[in-house]
Amino acid sequence: MTITDRRHTDLYVSAATFLTQYRLHPDPAGYLAHGYVDLCLAAWPTASGAELDLATRWAVWTWVVDDVFDSEMVGQPPQTVGEFALSLLLVAGGSARPSPVDRPTVHALADLVRDTRELMPTGWWQRYVAHLEGWVHAACAKLTDFAQPARTPTLREYLTLRPADGAMLLAAMWCELAEQCITPDWNDALVQSLLRSFSTVGFLTNDLAADKADTFTATRALAAGQGLSGSEAQEQVRVLLGAEECRFWWLYTAVREDDLDAATSRFALGLDRFRRALTEWTAGSVRYVPADPKTPQRAEEQACATLHLCP
Image (cartoon, rainbow, N blue to C red; front, side, top):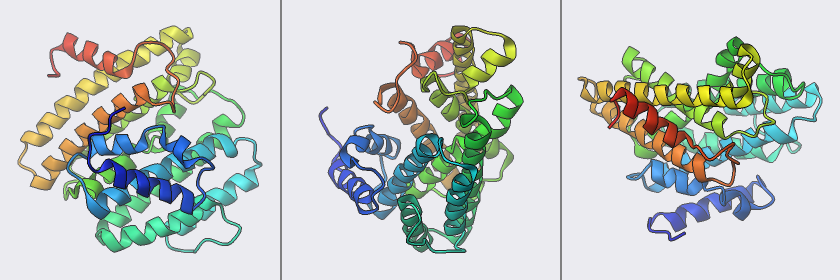
């Protein structure tokens, strides 16, 4: 692959140093071959400096912790899982510093918290840490209630837990951080609708690329709840994703046209860029093994063309 973005080398070195310094992965180069740096550069084309670097470190750290929950913790007893989650929550909230026996991810989190509090406004950080804590709780619940017992969720259980577990609202705030477009309208009804759609697009895109052994996906929940075959449920999720992509475009257009703060318009643009970059990355990253040749991007194009909504 030919690298054309002049920011790539510095950001790649920073991400590799981050993984190495905190011993977050035994093979930093192999882990970064998943394409996290490329995703961040594509999602945040005008970002630079400390903001881009910090947003990328948050993204990489979040994927690493997600992998800890999804792999290392699966065979651990409840006490170990609870202690890990509690250490993340205490350090994120500023109630404790990492102890020598804490995992590398906890030590890395402490420095991410410090760097973020120095760079970002207090109100933004309070919002971020609240969603970070929600993500940790959701990841822990998914592990103990579904992954460890290999139990498929009902649709209600899936829809209750997946938005927080998907971490897409954290990604939305990475966009604010990287592109310095902190919206004062986060709690506006229209912006909240856009954020929910952004979140749904993200976790359905991820579900379509998930390993077939993963029990906590929309596909598995639909198959179990509606008596569908795996391929039938997969197709239903594609249809849902396509419809949600069109809904996102509808809401995105409304926010961009509305008389909201200029930063909110830039924020909406940042969400659109991130979800496009995420869809392309998910379809091609070695992190995922696609279930079949159809990709989430093709589902989006087909559904939106049918409805004559998306450009």
